[in-house]
Image (cartoon, rainbow, N blue to C red):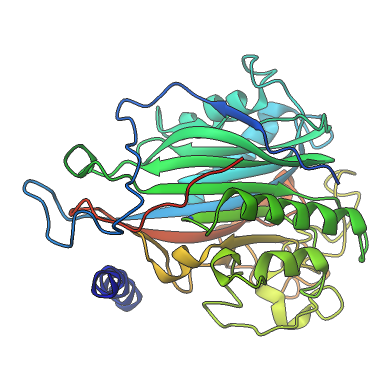
Length: 405
């Protein structure tokens, strides 16, 4: 088994090197499942770990793929405060065309009924008029829940050419719903190997407010407790969105990155594995070292271009993409690409400045039309990572943990 892991990560390492050179009240009993996909994902045999060995099966093909993952707080999308749907969709199209995400979470959307058609269903609205208007028949959305009856919701969109959506599980509900989405990679060899590479994504939007915030800490701690109850060890899993954390010492943040069982703790890539920063970190009171990673705000003023957002320019780091140990190590056909974490549109010089301001210097981290779209669309910068995917040729893999309620 150790030899097999080394072989897998060598593949990841080789490709990454080459590129650099040229997985309050808790409610965990609600699952929404879509129609089974054309190729039903077969359950992995719990043991032995590698039932197919390391030898490629006949007629399988070698392939590497990249998933671009982006989390974006879209600031009350749909309530009219920032403009009409048509106006905002234009800005979002510009941003999506630039980033080209394969997995996109939109947090803080106005609440809607996912059983309704567009425009009453804002997820359908974005899918039709933004995502698939750019690339026809490429995107779909995962069914969200809102059992907490919050006036804001989060939604996950995905590239259905690369991924297939299986189900939504309401992981935790406290003020807002924290949904766990299950997808799998459309591996070209799956009809031969019958071994599915799953990806799980949790989307967050926590209670905002000045630190310390007991509700926010309870939300994040409760969410992680629910994850650890559901999985004995974490699979290929991403936990992303707007966490509203003011520093790394907050109880909620600590519940994510630290645990006695290291197989269930998650990593914030700029800290690990990239090791750009070390703990403890206080980006709220000492933002300067984290300049290019700060996500709040794209705007210097709270009343321009509208009255929806916050002011101060890039002054804190609320939006994150946390990854599981498997994604850190590339253990099971998916792995975080080192150094790929990015705050879209932040050049590190936006303290007390608009994202598209010429002062203190012209922002050249993205095209001008993208910077303007980010300024108009939301007061939050999106954050993104890239995940490398290796096609499974042997039919052997580490068994995914059993899901329990």
